[in-house]
Image 1 (cartoon, one colour):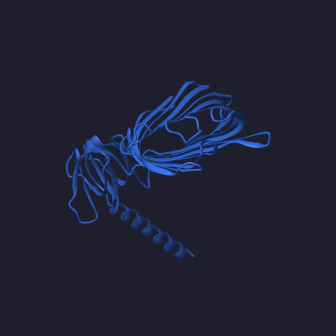
Image 2 (cartoon, helix red, strand yellow; image 1 turned 135 degrees about the vertical axis):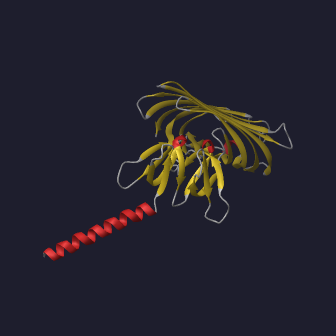
Image 3 (cartoon, rainbow, N blue to C red; image 1 turned 45 degrees about the vertical axis):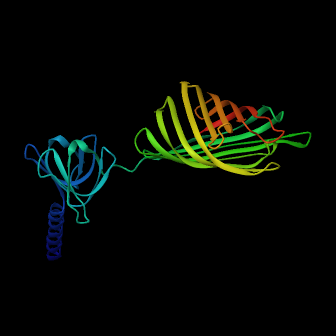
Length: 340
């Protein structure tokens, strides 16, 4: 039994030493200005600070400006301030500069520390926000009615992109007869080149029997500028081109190229009061006098953390509508809204 215990302790010690020296032989190494050497794994660099993790202590955070030399055993992902991403092993033969050595045999790229935004940054955070609403509405224009309206919006936002979905459905009957039924929907994907500028591709769809529109479809790309985007206010401006097509109930179907201009504003005046406005203008390229405009303004007041009352005003204008159809429709919608 004693022989077995001695053999077990000896074997365990050999394995532990092998693991220790094996880790040391394959660890990343950082040499500081004062000569101290830190070994471990370089996990990230953010805001000018390098984080090194080891199996024997808490993560160590080191200012990049204090590093004299650095070398990594495995490849890392280096993000530069200009947006470029380089993958490879790190080495720093001299203070203030780092060399990224790609694994495909290309020559190493020398970069000064002040050009590096991050190393192995965490995956972009994805955030979903949105709302659902249901309420009563009144409309004047092509029809006069009282109806039920159902609407919703969902936005998925990360540091580099954003996806937006919006819809509104209106339905009403008078005396057992259908008096109004229309649907508006929009999908848009934004990819941010910088914190402010982004490119987008979007599609907008519309149906309204009483405006002689069986299906209107607008799809195309463009560019945008995010003026503000914080907890109090948000404003974006967009310009683009799109393919516009209409399938009509009675009129002649048609399609054409159109310019698109849009703006979206949200402002939280108080904790309980928020104003928003979404404007879209579509202008036919070969006939500037032919354009459509949709503006949706809303004021919401909080009832609780998730619930609010929302009053919306929607204006739709068509400069050249179908025969016997008014140019302007206006909706007033009072709805109960749930936000998530």
